[in-house]
Length: 232
Image (cartoon, rainbow, N blue to C red; front, side, top):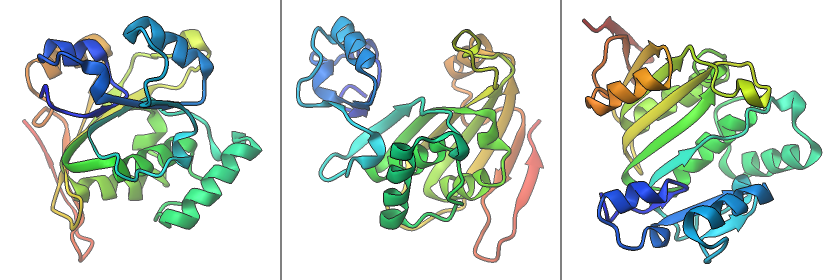
């Protein structure tokens, strides 16, 4: 929607939706100075009070509540975190007391922290390492997302998106919408394997983000029961 507030998104998408001043609806955090050079090229400015050279995990949401969070968080394992990153993780855990293990990778903390910024009905779009759909520590995170969103879709990509940057790990694209700021529901998680971004773009263009062929799981209820079915 042209009225949405979006945390780190493409300005041209808001323009296409009819927004006359897209920069006024975009907020962003990054620890890389190069990101602000890109910002100047896209928006013609590097800081208008909405873009910050700051570690996202150290940011308190305060009054900043947005409609969407879009992110490609660091693919850094706990064992590869530097002292500053581990310190941020420890401080974050003391504040939020998550259900997943401290040894989770950095992306897990970014994903969990992003929920603090969402309005009711909000959406997520994250590019994550393949381990986000298969590791033991990811299970409580995905279960939480199922219960806090009306729908959760996980696309497993065969294409290696970051091979030129030296990252051989495959990736997933996680999409969630219909955020509940309190309580929980019996959310549905759908998982599908796709060849790459071209196929994913075609699926999303056809509006198949909610009901696509693949494994669909109903979130665990209070008795920890799970129902699984295969879509046709």
